[in-house]
Image 1 (tube, rainbow, N blue to C red):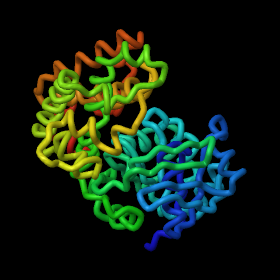
Image 2 (cartoon, rainbow, N blue to C red; image 1 turned 90 degrees about the vertical axis):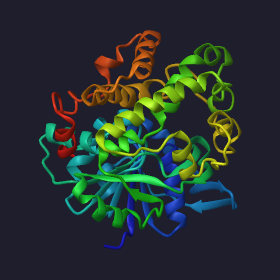
Image 3 (cartoon, rainbow, N blue to C red; image 1 turned 45 degrees about the horizontal axis):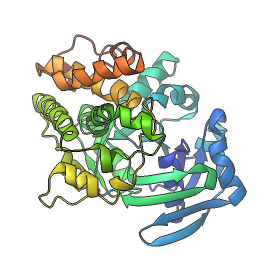
Amino acid sequence: MTIGKVAIIGAGNGGITASADLTMRGYEVNLFEMHEYQQNLESIRKKGGIDLKDEKGETFIPFNNVTTDIEAAVQDADIIMLTVPSFAIESITKILAPHVNENQIIFINGAGTMGSLRFVNKAKEEGINTQFKICETNSLTYGTRAFADEARVELSLYVKKIFFSAYPSTETHTLLEKCSQLYDCLVPAKNIWHTTLENGNPEVHPGPALLNAGRIDYSDGEFYLYKEGITEHTVKVLKAIEKERMAIGKAFGYELENAIESRAGRGYFTDDGRDLQTLFNTSKVYSAIKGPVAVDSRYFTEDISYGLVLWSNLGKVAGVDTPNIDSVITLGSTMLERDFYETGVDLKSLGFENKTIEELIGLV
């Protein structure tokens, strides 16, 4: 199957960027946003396109295929690409799943959080038993910031390497062949446990951000985690969480990439022998990223709820102690006055409670 038409679900950083990029490369693209966020589409409608700035310069890309009608958005699409936050998977599933047929590919392009499994589980809960062709990555295929109110994208990186898996994993190579028509950076992962454990955000964001909470509060939005918040001391928490994550991966049979390997592989910086702190502080891509601007941002809420809580669960199954992961969950819960252990994605909520490692691997 030659991919010709792509429906993009979610008009945030990834969605607006992908709409501009894929349109520029000759694909027919529809961009969908939910009614409550339709303001993200207004400037594109008015301007009749998207301004894209990348390393080659600035380009205006005529584009006006925007809609809040999910059925119209996905009609005849070969690939339906979800570029939505982790917390939106279930709500998107409710409106999207009834309109997807078994020939269409659902491609979750973003930080891996077991989105494929959660989509299928929610669809079944809604009484929809379609045999979905569904897959996910461990990270977004772009290093980018989109400004919806200006219909403008600042694209700093076309990512060079992203892990990719289908659910079930027996379909990975078939779907990889199709999705690689859009992105040549995709490499096969073992399964969606693998992509989830290669998601670097829970490792990098909440720990160092938690240690900078006072600075975030005081800065009134003028805070740069990668440039100023990752220091010789806060990076030690990051590396401790990295060690626990990699130990979990080893117990599952995966040779996971460390923080330097994964980001150098994606192209965010070059592994030139300098330490992790320096690489983050001086990366042209990372050092330009502002945020988090508040302690209730996704750097805390999403990466604890949809990352660290599940990693903590997997550590228990694997017999791996996770004191640093658990500390960040506990302190984050205290600071934000919510119980992330209670509300986060865990093995019980995924339907995998009381399973062994072998059983967990066999189920995906």
